[in-house]
Image (cartoon, rainbow, N blue to C red; front, side, top):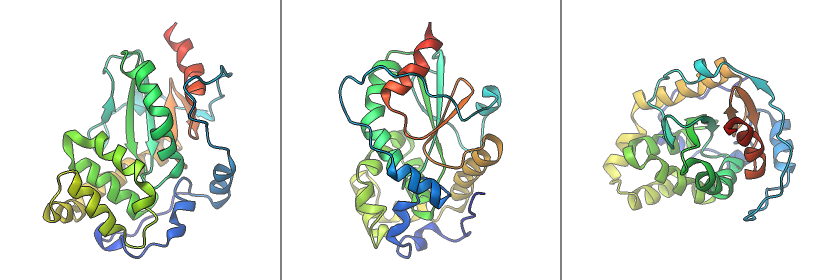
Length: 239
């Protein structure tokens, strides 16, 4: 069951959350969070050994999955790429940050930049800090992925900070925000409602309950997939 997040200003929530937030930011279940935390991190090696394709945890109708939602899609790659990957992520999830730092660059080089894969990133925040991160990325307009990248790389500096507001403000200023535009973004109730709507749709319609969760060719794959696992799934779809 997905936790409901209080309907209050994200901006005022950034200085009151416990730092234990980082331990549960990838899952709604404490046991799931422990299981994910206990998994060894994928080594950031340039050439991963071949592996068998992981089995999906479930399936969805890809046509329904790709229908327009509350917010415009943010994607990398050609719209007519033969394979589309939909990723649900949370900005405060360490496993999401690990994927974006270590696996996504290789995925881009091998598949996205070569026109084989389109990656759609959808918001699935588990807490107000994750909501704030996604809102700032959305307010960055054409710099959405650049902002996501910076926030994931500096995740420990703001997601676990006692005062996440000040930490996010400093990062945002480097990205071109003023204090006024920063506060305007994080007090935009319409944007907050839309980010939450993306999350609720993912949970209700597609069974997302942890992050990251990937959908590839109708299969649902929870967990931070390695490039070898992704290749094992993608390559047969390209043949």
